[in-house]
Length: 228
Length: 129
Image (cartoon, rainbow over all chains, first blue to last red):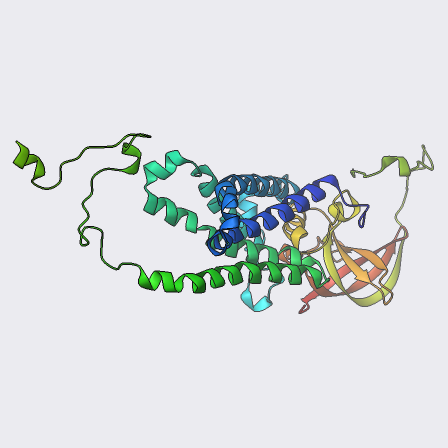
């Protein structure tokens, strides 16, 4: 053990934080990797479970940190998270008392909304558009996590290894998204600009309305009227 | 009362110590020290680490709750010493709790009270990090 005096609570706080941070990077890399190489596609199917697991790790980190650093004081622990470093915060004083805890709370709230709606039930009831928009907030959560780590834990260590590792992760995530976007740019350019209706397609039914190994009979336009 | 990490490492030297009938104070003189503001409960207790940015909110809670403040000072070789901070004689210490964990320059009268060094604070100036 590098730090034999470190307590069990501190180990839990750090271990869950590190595991959640690494998992968040892996989760964010799966999307562009699957678009770049189909061999990564199976990972795409398990990304949802990975995300929910990552949320629970972040939750354990948050609960332990709140109890360890904010409980049993002269303020409500939740209030303390948002005010302890903010009461006298002055940007002119630099980053020493920058309230990094708030960004952790923002990220956890987003991750909770995503984990809670990571089910086909919510995808169907919220609608694909809103559900997708909600889950794109993972990038806001990722940014908040980076601020939380950079202005929090990294301020307590002098070793350059930690900021370098975080920078490698950030460059990896951004780089993979950029490469995937560049690779797909020609495909997007040739994609039809018109709507299916303008191309002569008619809405008939939802995919899930067609039973397995069965067809569905529909009348198109005046076809049904002509038959009658 | 203090919570201990390894109680077995503590030994009672005198189970029936004589009551301290009087406080002996020896003046050291006016000094200026630079260091980090810590809260004594966490620093001498089980909180490990009890320093740094992640512990700052905890230190603020402790200091605002009345836990005595200390100044952690490092010498040229990195050895640390803790100076309990106190107010002027007969006065309570008036310290902005938002200075917890931050590096400051403290000026005041140092004295040995029953062989414990403490610093009676006259002024505190925050240092840029």
